Amino acid sequence: MNIKNVIVAVLSLFLVTSLQAKTFKIATSAPDGTYLMKQLRTAAKEIKKKTDGRVKFKYYPGGVMGSQDVALKKIRIRQLQGAAVSNGILASFYADSQVYTLPMLFNTFEEVDYVRKVIDKKIIDGLESNGMISFGISEGGFAYAMSMTPIRETTDLNNHKVWTPTNNKQAELTLRSFDITPIPLNIGDVLAGLQTNLIDTVAVSPIVAIALQWHTKIKYITDIPLTYIYATLLIDKKEFNKISMDDQIVVRGIMNKVFKKIDVQNRKDNVSAFNALSQQGIKVITPDDKALNEWYRRGGVSRESIRSNGTLSKEIYQEISELLSDFRKTKETLGAAR
Image (cartoon, rainbow, N blue to C red; front, side):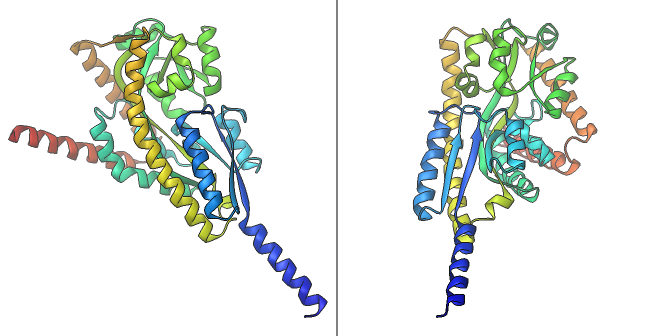
């Protein structure tokens, strides 16, 4: 082999290796040591082993890379390749990703599970069509109003300083339909906001409240599932495509498996966390029937406002409404048969 052929062979090998080897830098607000981070680190080890070290994950937990908005900006400039984020931030990529968070849409986890069998894939496919790879959805759970003073009726909210995530149009529309002017803050600033009384009310799931220590600054939780929240891990599609197809298959398989595991565990942890909050002296407020009916009426008004605003597509809104209607009719029929 002459020197020219040797150089060509070496360069070809270098190019193939540079295409296939990749370290994905991933940011998240989740504190280190949480179940999510433990599972993500386990997945990273398995991926590294099964790709012979070609694909690695480096995590930046606890919000050290900044808010979720900042993390997305860093993805765009290639400082990061991905982030584990809550659902609210996904609207900038795919608006219909917010369909689960329609106010007071679900009454039970049974309804959630029925709908998710159909809609999860649409959300994941929609994100990928818009340039972001998702490896599955992990349940955040039902968000409840948690506050410094009791909230029994919708009108009680008028006297509270209510937090909303920054740049979350649907959350803002929801709160405004309840005649609330929300106070937008990044997730990383919420605890300080509670400590300084900038805000006194948050709507969040029990496991998130405990993981981020927000529960230390609230005294009441209103036992009404206001909305359903979730999280996912996103990787920039262009960056993901820099690894070989075989390695992509490995990463997808391992991460999909891990997110299913996280999804199941989060359901259990949310139930335990709700009980833990009450055991720590946080009082659970249960509205009476009259107040509860008004909550659901206002929830319906809010959903209609979001539908007419065009925040979600007509197709996704109609599909989830039909799925829930079919499920509830089936339950009623089965109940009557008994």
